[in-house]
Length: 289
Image: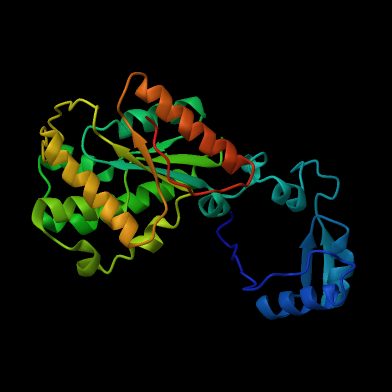
């Protein structure tokens, strides 16, 4: 968008059918109020002529034959997924579907995020904390607020710059940092930073909690806790469940037991994405055995 463009929000649902009683009056009054009685109205559809008259403004028609932008706002709204490329960055940030994967260290989150992103020709949002660890060699308590902010910035940037699809896969979130801080230092980050986990997790279309059992631990110098004991990793899993359930956050459990686990996990996530594409966003809990 141009530097001199200001986006205004109506703050209420506007009528969409010109045949409705009060349609033109409502739109004219709203436009004049929001824009301080403008003298001109630029519109790329025939309705601009009537609306400008109701507003007592001059209509400036623009791209009526759709040669510059070959689609209307109405058509975009009918199928946002199909017409994703026409959305401005701010709209993409609002409408993008975020799929969050959480779990203990070395349970396959990053591998799965990368694979799903490649398959769907989209992006995955990496864990900001890992970048901090790579650069500084360790994570200190004073880094936690930066990690929360950094992860949000990563997600925002990913959503705004996602050109191909209306979905992104996220490898971390505020709940991950909160759980990690409590286990590592006994810090209640929710109270300390005023974090509302239900609100933070509400932006995700689906949250998958990966059960690490059956998934071998892969040692990595960038894993801060190095929790090689499966029982110790279970502490993470149980804490995630505790936070999700106590905050009434809907999630699905992916079990890593058995052969072909990665394929099974992908398949279940694919089923979820198919439902999302059909606008049937159901949040049930299930386990892959």
